[in-house]
Each structure stands twice: as C-alpha cells, then as structure tokens.
Image 1 (tube, each protein chain N blue to C red):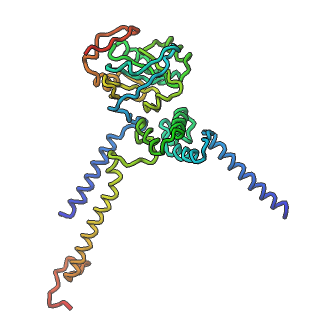
Image 2: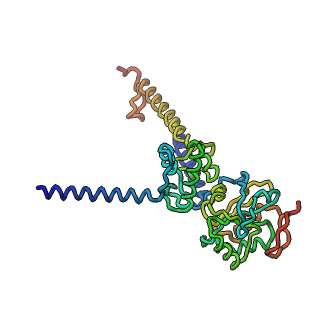
Image 3: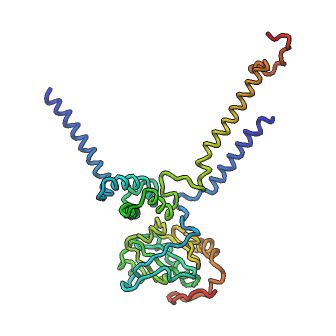
Length: 191
Length: 159
C-alpha cells in the first residue's frame, strides 16, 4: 500500500496546483500594471485647450488623485464618461485627464457635449507619457496616493461596481467629503 | 524546346517577384532606417522580441497599431542614445512588465518555473538510482525479479 502513497500524493498536489492556476488565471486581456506600489511617473505636458499653460504632475504631491487615460477615438471612454462625472461630483479625489494621442479640437468638443469630469487635462499628443505609465489601451484609470505611489490601475471602462470595489476600498474614508457639485475646483483633502 | 524553357523561366520570375512583393509589404509597417547598419540590426532584433501590448500575439515590429509605432520610436530613441539592448529591455519591462518580452527573463518571481525542470530531473534521477540499486540488490540476493512471489530458493539449491 505504501508504494501508492507517493504517486497519489504527487497527483493530488498537481491537481491542487493546476486548480489554483485555473482559478486565479486572470482574463488574458488585462495585464497587471508594472507600476503598482512604485512612484507614479512624473510628467509635464501642455494643458488641453490652453496652449500657454502646462500641467505638472508634481502639483498633485500630497493628494490622492486619479489619472484617467482617454481619447475621443476610444469608444469605451464614452461608456465610462458618466461614471467619471459621478466621481467628480462625489469629490473623493481629483481626476486628471491624460488625453492620449488625440485631436485637441475633437477632445474639447467631446467635453463640451458630455461634460468635463477632469480637474486638469494634460494633452499627450505624442504618446510618450502614456508609455512611461505603461498604458496599452484606453480607457485606463490609475489611483495615486499622497506619497506619489501608484496604488491601483483599472483597464477598461470604469463602472460603479469597479469604482466601489477597487477604488473606494483603497481610498481613506477621510478623503470622501460630502457631495460637491461638478465643476467646482477640488480642495486638497484635509489631513 | 526553347519556348518551353522560357515558360519555366517566366514562372520562376513571376514567383520570385510575388515573393519579393510580399517582403515589401511586410516591411512597409516599419520603413524607418537607422543611420548605422549595426544599430539597424539591433533595432530589428529588439523590435521583433517585444510584444505589441494591444495585439499581444504580434511583435511591435509586425504591428501597424499606433502604440506599436510609439514603442518602436521609444526603442529607436534609446538605441540612438547609446543604451544597451538589456537597458532597453529593462526600460520597457519597468513600464509594461515581463509580458512585453516574448522571451521571458529569469527573475525571482518566475524562478520556480525556470528551475522546475531541473528539480523534476533530479527527483527522477534519485528515483531511478534507487530503483536500479534495489534491483541490483535483489539480483545479488539471487531472487529472480520476474517471479517475486516465489519463496527465496533454498540456499542448498544455489548453483
């Protein structure tokens, strides 16, 4: 009987390992960010619609903030737009838009039509900043903490469910003040 | 006779032209030339071993997608800046993770995957040695391994 214990044990182990592998196998289209728990790449870019202004990511140091990568050529960005507006209205954290390889005029028209969920919008016309952030498809939404570390990245349209499960759970409760009307500039969270 | 030869020739010519035309199309995705042929070769090699993250089963050299073009530009600029191949790979892995490499590198995260074949081989070796030693011992003890059920032969019977 003893001689069977080893093979059966090995087989059982294999079954367990493979079962875990199948269970945990993420959908192949979503690749986890290499930037998790690493410093968010800094960037300075012209601001969309204001050629004289530049946006510097350092200006957000010390705050929780979101980076949303979008473009008017991206159909799924339209799908998440209302959710972004709701996030802005909740005032939990400012959303910085990264307008990725887009046409400025088209982007401005999009915002005029659908509303502007962003506190600031950086125009990444050449896609260099997107590469530094490891972006491979829009929309993507990053969560950055006050220490400047990337805490989470979501690939695909932001939904209410994803927002609650992945973002709200990572944000400190203190950073969720009362509902703010969209359009008002967000103050830094009091700590 | 002559005409037939010429027909064969024409077919050959046509076939080679079609093949050459195909190569032209394949290269049209990325017509950029670097000044130095050595750099051009490294650029060719690197861009073929980096994955297009959007299409996933194409290299950035083969993909016409916008992001692949941006990544090729990134590779070119790093090459021109004098970075080594490994520095360029590390640069992109830092941004996109191991997945961007078609040939994965050894790292602490995937060490077990690389070492598993060696470990399995060693286990197999140990098992094989033990089995062989066991058989040799049985043989030395004068037991016929094909009839293990039979009681050991009487010592007096031994020839």
